[in-house]
Amino acid sequence: MEWEAYEERIESPPGEYRTDVPAIFTDAAVFDEFVSDLAGLLNPADFDYVAGIDAMGYIPGTALARHFGVGFVSIRKDEKLPVREENRVADSLVDYTGEEKTLEVNVEHVPEDGPVLLVDDWMETASQVETAIELLERAGGTVGGIAVLAAAETETTRRLDEEYGVHSVKPFREGA
Image (cartoon, rainbow, N blue to C red; front, side):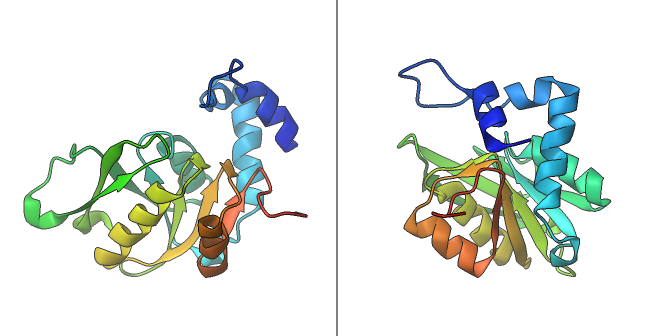
C-alpha cells in the first residue's frame, strides 16, 4: 500500500496535530498489509529480536516479532515496570508534545546475544527512539535497526538512519 493510502486512513481533523495511527490496526487487511510493507523494508539478518516503545510501538513491534519468529522486548513509559530497581534502566526525555516522560526497560529482558530492531509508530523529534536506544545499550543490548510508520526528516533522523538504519513506510529522505 502506498503511503498516501495510510495517510488518508490516519488523517486527523484540521488543526489537530496528532494522527490516528490506530486506524491502521482496526481493519485486519490493512493491518496485515502494513506489517507486510514494513517487514518488506527490513533485512531479517540485521536483527534477532524486536523491541517496541510503549504504547503504539507495541502493536507493530509485536506483529513484526511474530512475522519474523523472534522475541519481543518491551520498553515501558512512566515508571510502570513491575521489577526490582536493580533490574531497571530508565531515563527521562521531552517528547514532541514538550512534556517530560520516562522510558524504562527490564535489563533481564534485553538480549545480549543478538541485535534488536527498535519499533515505534512515528518519529517526529526522535527523542523516544534515542532514549530507547540508550536504554537498550545500557542494558547490554545492541540496536540493529529502527522501524516506524513515518519519520520526519530532521538532522536527528538522518543521523539515526546513518548509524542504525531507519526503515519507514513513509519515505523521509528527500528524493526517496
